[in-house]
Image 1 (cartoon, one colour):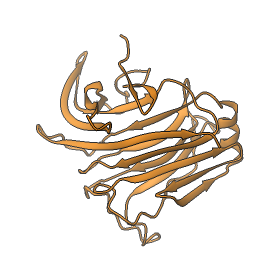
Image 2 (tube, rainbow, N blue to C red; image 1 turned 180 degrees about the horizontal axis):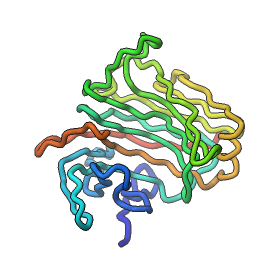
Image 3 (cartoon, one colour; image 1 turned 120 degrees about the horizontal axis):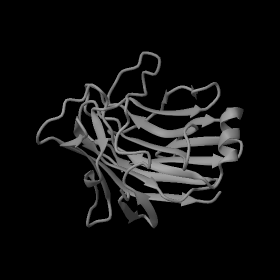
Length: 235
């Protein structure tokens, strides 16, 4: 079946990943093309909604919106301006990964709302990083993958009520991650950078909403991950 596509922010995007509508280890959610909408004002609306769908004998209750770029990108600056969805156990993200394999992966951010719908989560070791919003990275060695480790960054405002700029600058030797123009992390792991270097020109952009296993779907509950724009610039 042909994957649905849209044009937004000057680029072409698929509304699901090529490997399918759901991951066999996460059968409580599926990538729902109907949960992706471009509003009249040009804002991308990625929804989480109760929309049961049958895949053979398996019924999956929750549909989630996703876009992934059709074309690959090279070194440069990748930025979105986004307002995160409000609700419990949501998992929105903005990340980079190759067109035809996984890993590696670079997470500009992943949000985990858990029990607090605005992502507030006190961390004793990071008392001024109030929101459970994290950057991370994955690489292929050792098999099946290695995770560099999630790390929070500082945000001065509620990300569910305000638009925040999330950006990563990809250089040959490092990634620099910024949230609202404040640098929150530099990643220069040689193995990770080597894997991305081999794949330059083939790195896709993914923006998606998601839910964790603890999410309880409601018949009328819809959350909205709003993205004003995506910008890529050569550095």
